[in-house]
Amino acid sequence: MEAFTLYPKKIHIIRIDPGEDVLLEIGAFARKADIRQAVVTGGYGTLVSHSLHWVTHNRIPTDNSFGKGEGGIEILSMNGMVVEHEPHIHVTLSTENGAYGGHMEPGCRAYVICEVFLVEVEGIDLRRVRVPVDIPGMGKGSISRLEADRGGK
Image (cartoon, rainbow, N blue to C red; front, side):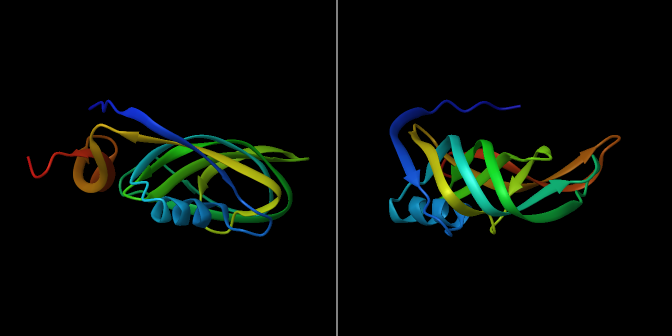
């Protein structure tokens, strides 16, 4: 376990317009505004379509399942991070049939309203790296891990 202490710099509210891809627009905004790292503190709205993925078991290497859907889809919650300008976001969605969630993929297109809140943070630079692991009962392979970029230290 490792903890990272960062400090809020700016709060950004992003309006995603009807038909726009939520994940792609957040990434485009982060690159255009040069937001290297931020915390996605929330988001809400509606989607005309969604594309999510889930891990399907608790073994290494991981296995993913992908799903898509269309129709009136409500965003109940959204959270995650932007690291090195790239968003990694999880969402909880609902339809009249119930709620479900997963890892947001390209293909989550805004319907009527969609607003996302980013808190840009500073203090140390974060990055995602792949590291080898060998965990008894889970397996051996590599995983993505959040680390502080300490300039090669």
